Length: 281
Image 1 (cartoon, helix red, strand yellow):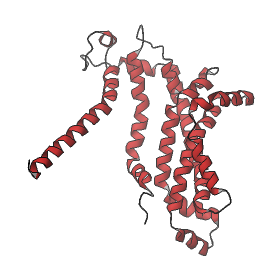
Image 2: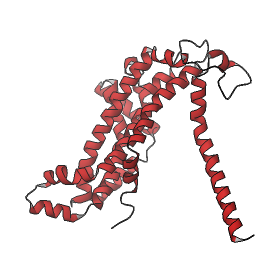
Image 3: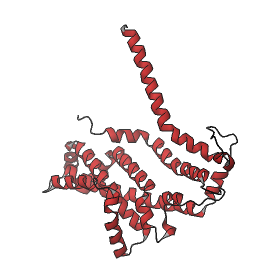
Image 4: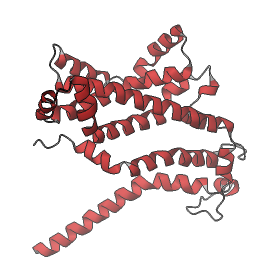
């Protein structure tokens, strides 16, 4: 087998592998979309069909007539945006301090922040719920504070690495021009961290938007504060007589669209943020 034949076979196997991975990753989204567009009769028939015989929007209409789902969308938006803004605000200050300042205990602080990401949610759920019940906090502020336990360490860690990679000459030039530490942070360094802010902010938003365990627990006695994952899990349906599969799939599509739009809008910033600091120079 000559070199040219091996090269062609390598290309064929490569694109075959890419195609299989693409199908494997995209099939759940395709199946959710197809199921959402099927009628109730077609959903329960056997054998199942991979293409809808009749396109129907009744599942989407039922979803948008569901008050609990619409309220869940609003609650999820409030919680996710609050978590994102607070994580970026606190994380940027912490990243600036850990990346550019010298103080005693900086290395132990970094290791402590990293260790906070190692605990699974279920390990801290009981104790956290007891604290929240003792403080008598409402469900939405409880979820915001709880989600930051997991989003803030990641945000601090990434932003610290990003601030550390910024040249020291920027700080020195700002000091020569008479800027203090806060002016240097707000006016010079923070705008340069836009890729990292977008990346960490988007990941924090996605985690808060999709979180289910804490939301289910904290809203158990306050149903009006349920976020959209909990509302979908407790979906009773409007049209389906049994399990409302079509409506659940339609709700999943509606919930996924904002995340897809955000990723498409900020995709260039995300790549810059993820690769920042990979090459020094």
